[in-house]
Image (tube, rainbow, N blue to C red; front, side, top):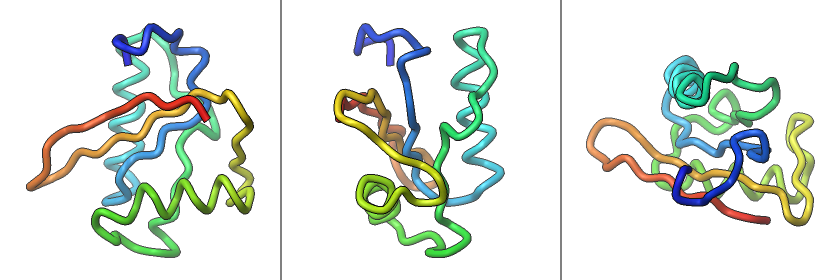
Length: 100
């Protein structure tokens, strides 16, 4: 995220690979703690309860649901700053900052 040169307060959503709800929440909390911030409410959309772990499709599926359907109260607007991130067993840790 530092490479994006954005302020952490600009980050509206984190789209994280949907492997485990508790694990994902812990990862995002730890990410925010590096900036001496608490994880904001409503920053981490989740769909694992409905779709399960769909492997590489978890992030694009969730992004599409939020973008098109205001999924579970999550929405995006033009120029929002979001992050796509993936971490888990058998995969590299990846993250990209994206401007909608």
